[in-house]
Image (tube, rainbow, N blue to C red; front, side, top):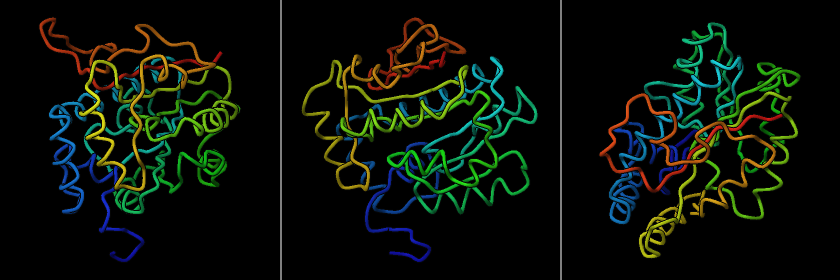
Length: 261
């Protein structure tokens, strides 16, 4: 265990994701966990890249539809194409709050964003959504009487079935009509039980176990939201910038964007 509350004895999803993307803000325990995930899911690094590309497209879509404030929950460590960079390129002055439960994200994020008055980083946990939407810095940056873009990118699959409804009810209930939700989620569809169990076994060693679900179960996270076309699809098929018709879809990960009426 290091100081500042950063646990280097257990893998952490934010640091694992950083390593998936080729980052350096991770430890040996995280890299060992990633190797174990790759043994069951060889495409995982491509998935991470496609997931980030989906985030950028979703933010551009929301900003293009008038969203000027965003909450990126489970933001992870800063990397290329961050939410604020995409949003502020479309809408100068857009405000972004990054939320994560890993102290290393807070430290790195605040150092990176110190010069950007339209962004902040806070430590909170999706599993305690009242602490997210009620956090003083979130309230300082976000006007909940106006539409908000909420990002749950590769986050909903860390919620247990019994957590889904209470967490999503709090988030949805805090948002004004016209708000958007973007989410991605791993799926069990068309995969062997052994492969799914191999990945879940790795994540059970982290503070946040992962839960694979079917398409219809994932769609329930969007209850109360109207999904924008093309709906809930594999992330590479959601409004791609470029599409090779011959390419294989990223079959492990669904993504969608919904609007609150």
